Image 1 (cartoon, rainbow, N blue to C red):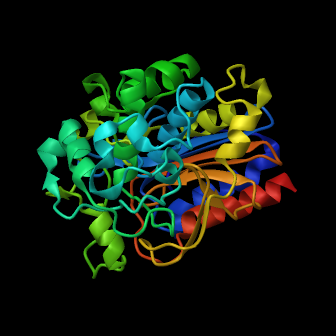
Image 2: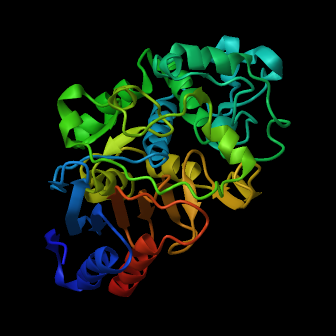
Length: 365
């Protein structure tokens, strides 16, 4: 049996049992889970192997590359800038980033970047990975890119490009890259072990992601294109990727930091209110709903946050490729951070988080 470490309050014992069962029944290799409820940490668990290539065990401070779970960090940065009166979400992107007006994009508002409605989920010509990691070449490529559909007429998941698009707006306004802004305005004040652009000193703590054997790509062609904006594709185990800033998808964090991040967004006892209630309400109101032109299935988004039916319409946050998730449920004042290194792919249900969610529902009743 895989040793499980950490703490769980008695009311949430079922969540611990589900976490243990994921190792026993569903192939979990290394993972961590943290839950906050009404201002208190009620679950903080970790276990398994962080790096199967070395046998390194998962520790309390093991960091994990969380793919699109990063979008929750980046969206919050944008809303913080807007809350300060420096960014108007209804203004054209070109007001802040004049070059963006090229190729018929002069009227696209910032709101459509955050809600996946800009029509820019992919590049006609992917750029070299080394250039993308340097930031400016990707911003330049996006200025020249034509929209793939009439902006505002539909939505399609901007899997990689959203981070560079929103991040460049943040950079133009604040003079800081989104990773630096996140560190200085959110992660450091809250004491979060979370990064968009990993400092080299923390590289030794990063878990090794385990991608499944190739068995045919079940992703839609549009998603494959949206994921392939660089040549070669982004390698989530590459330290040079960890050190760069890819605000859609290269966040590196712990489960505890994810849960505490969302706790600071929804709970007035957090001591550091990131967003005012009105700001958060606008950010989590449905902006895009229905068939997603990139994913090929129905999706639901607010402004930068995904909206999930886990416990009703008020559940918001973001998940990432492979299974990681940070999410908040306003009615119960509950937040969750879940990270793991064995990636789940394809459209089949990932039973690991389903089991955790079911157990949490039972505990909250």
